[in-house]
Every structure is written in structure tokens, then in C-alpha cells.
Image (cartoon, helix red, strand yellow):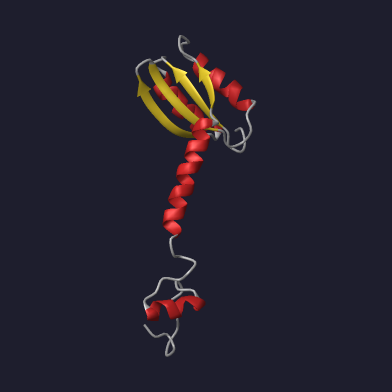
Length: 126
């Protein structure tokens, strides 16, 4: 591909045309995806290890959601809260609570003693 005769497509940066013609990957792209995956794995492990835990087993609706809300208010933005509950209504309540409050529901798993929810606190409380 030689762009000397015509305009360069907008998705190709000006300084990268030499790599397209030579068949080499640009240095800024070499190995980037592997490094990003490794970083994400370390980050998710660190978040797992630093997660606060709320044991709401034995509580019925709406107490697990209210306790989670109270605990999230005391946490910093971006912190992860792990909620353990055996309330059958929590399957519906927790995702709805996260969507309404601006928090991210990282995972929802069924475990032997009920359910486990992982919630990342959002930047602002709605």
C-alpha cells in the first residue's frame, strides 16, 4: 500500500504507513495484547483479594440490599464488595439495586449456601 499518490485513509496514523508497506508491526503495538491480559489478570486477582465481604445469609428481602447499600456508602469509589446471601429475591434485587445506584455488578454466582454477588462501587450515588 503506497499512499504517496493519494490521501491516506483516516484510520491509519501518518507515522504508521512505513510499517504497513514493510509488513512489520509498529513497535507501539508489539506484544500489547499479552501485556494487557496479564495486567487484567493481576488487577482482578488484586480486587478479589481486597474485596470487602458482607454476610447477609439468613436475612430476607429487603435487608441484604439495604445492608449492601450501607456498606457501599462507607467504601471508596472503585472498591469491591462481595455479598453472600441466601435470600431468593436477591437474584432480582441486587442487579436492580446496582443499576439504579450506579454501581457495577461484577458477578452473580449460585453457591452451595445461596448466592454470591460482587459489586464495584460507582463514582456517584444516584
